[in-house]
Length: 210
Image 1 (cartoon, rainbow, N blue to C red):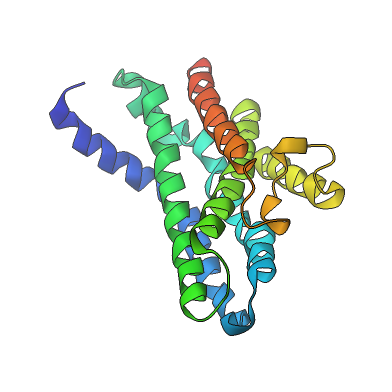
Image 2 (spheres, rainbow, N blue to C red):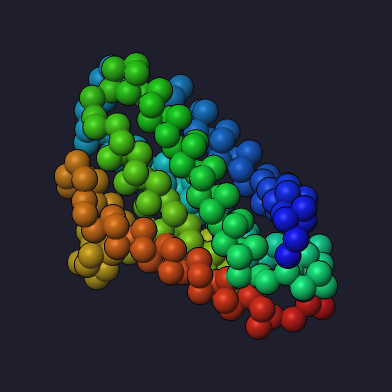
């Protein structure tokens, strides 16, 4: 691929990836502070907010990525002979960066307004949680060709961990920040998210355009 083609391709994929789900995620993040009193928030309160509520942003922004080839993306991935794996991973990374930005801004605002918690462990942990079950939903959407299945799969993992407190998922428990300031198992979740993203990128070429 020629270098002069990279910038238009990046702009095209950014435009394609940044759809209504990004707007919805931003809107929810903006609304949340209106129901919070940061000066009264301690670490456990911030962890519950992040792990149990804000992490849902991941389920909003990831699953649809697996179906973007419908209605135009296929032209970029197939007709122009651009390898789908790096293009898909670029979209996933864009989404992850956007998710990080939204979550970082929210928790930075809470921290500045008096909430007492370690800022970067909180941001990192919540972003990883959101990316983990959001990417799990993405994987289900890719395998089934149905974005609704992706939402159901991600929410099922959420409910499973919420109800069993991680007894079934072990080191891949989503809500480790509820127990401590930083959970080293978050790195396993981050690795799982990346592995699932690579799997999705490798699986997509198996599908055929209509």
